[in-house]
Image 1 (cartoon, rainbow, N blue to C red):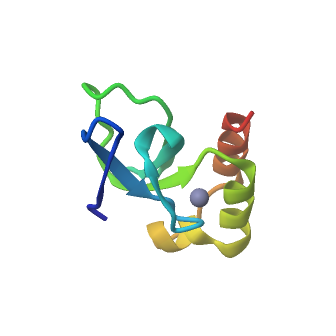
Image 2: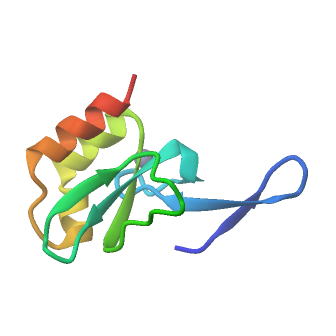
Image 3: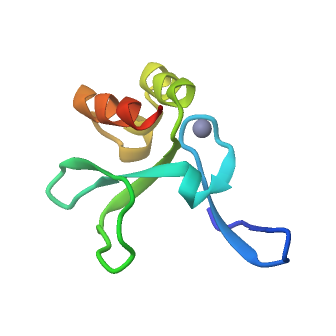
Length: 97
Ligand SMILES: [Zn+2]
């Protein structure tokens, strides 16, 4: 999961892997989905770094194609080893404009 890319100034840019297309992107282009300790799954968009949500996380691109693909291929279910409510996909799809 840990892989680094560099921006034009040679600065390290943290990247994460999309659970759907397996591409590596900067965090700002991805949305984080977390399975909490109680089993609930939440979408953490624009999470403030001071208020981390702990749990098993997965990242997905903020674009419709990737989200629909994830729904079709059950990519998130595989990441979380359990069911992902369809409301989660509805929230994710709203992020893509
Ligand atoms: Zn993707």
